[in-house]
Image (cartoon, rainbow, N blue to C red; front, side, top):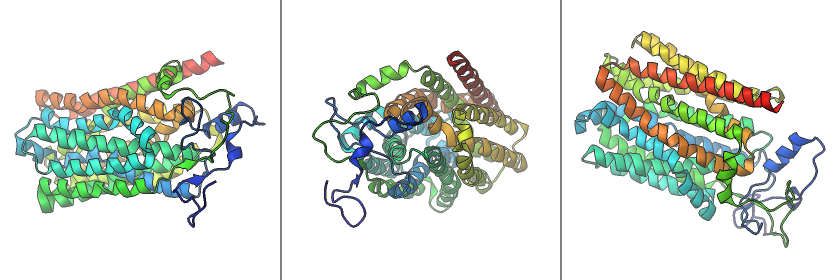
Length: 462
């Protein structure tokens, strides 16, 4: 065991884990406890079964709360950022004389690369660890946004804002979520719900900051300052100390009493998991319309005469609703009664979320859109609180990085084409409300699919 330092960790920055937590012990409570015990072991060993920075029993507290706080900030700066590009949407159109579909490629490429960069991110996590990868992502996203302020064409913006910044978001977001899952097991649903408030925090603060910077500095100065803000991901990554098991002379016994499967076999095994396949298909289809309303809400409101500040306030209210309700939702969904029912709560919330987009079709007035963001925000809170929890329910925690990476690749396709298709719809019709109607149909249909699919799977198993 390495020498402990004054912070409660070891001299090399890792948190020691009792060796006994890694050996096989038959749980007394049956399959549920066996599943929880298996979730406490991560499959980051080599092909020979040796441990390489292997997380042991998650502490469910302690330094985990610091990691949780850092993850909240990372999610605020990454997942919420593409939605706030809508504040600069009109300026980008006027600056580069671009159509709606051309301009919408900026946030769509950013969001798509955020998800599609999963395989590259997995390689970096394997080589560098979660901490260094998150910090690298902070550097990339900051440099990308700073470089965007000097672009001279919309195509250059695709590269700087879309590809470089989006890839930086990916490198920060996915390792943060992964390491949080290692720090929390018993309180995982609560930790995931709290971490998802980071997206809400970003939706609440970034529109206000973006609108202020837009007023004072214009879009170029705003992008430069926002690039500096994104460098805070480096600070968050620095506190994400990996859990590490003490060295052993022989490999430990795991729950299946066999060697850990190679990482490259993870995707093939996931494809034989019907629950994962159903969940991935539903989420992929959902993403075609889920983020579109957030991108077009501000342009929709301003196109009908609403002031930019009031339109940005709608996004902030949406974020505030999420901040208020996500923590109690996390406590509620962590109760024993919801064990095994997370997917159905998620699907019902997704159905409400999809149908809520129809409210925008009533009119572009502030009272109508205020009702919309409140209903959308409440349902979005449940969806955001449970999205990763459901994924952790349908796969073992040991395969969560592979499951998240594969899902992210699938999502990236629909996330890439969703906003541009909406832009084409606006260019053809000249009306924004068709976008919200189409988003409503897509998201609601994905919710119905998830309900039917998982009900059929549950019935088949019984």
